[in-house]
Picture 1 (tube, rainbow, N blue to C red):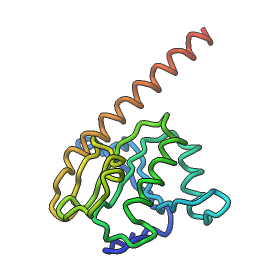
Picture 2 (spheres, rainbow, N blue to C red):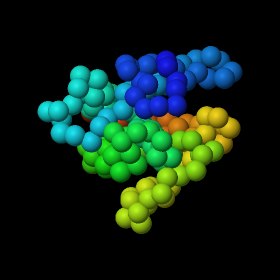
Picture 3 (tube, one colour):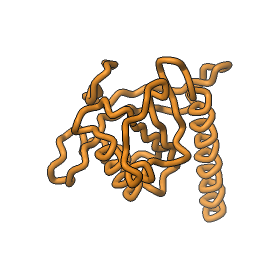
Length: 164
């Protein structure tokens, strides 16, 4: 995938896997999707609709990444990102969720108090440049994977009671 210091470098679905460090066994699948713009569904492009469809139909953990530096251009302003987050959270609030702010090594943009109040206070701060927060993100993802596993196990046990 393309990695650059400007928005919208993700132009398609990128799939990967999380592997167990000792056995090499696949633990989970990871999907990086193109970003969404704050607009009505009828105005969304094919990739945005595919992003939303994948979230609708695949049991998942949402890792919502925001860039609060203000360097992502007008279409991805802090306000726009927060609007998209609020929309996605409303649609998929039933999913396990991790809020992340990227580029923790850079300064945060000036924000009005109203905008700052909309930024999730429990968001993990990460930097791919310095590695800051990456262990905390890893730990949060694995904690959610464990929760998903336990939930699936409970569902399977419930189903087996019906079958027996």
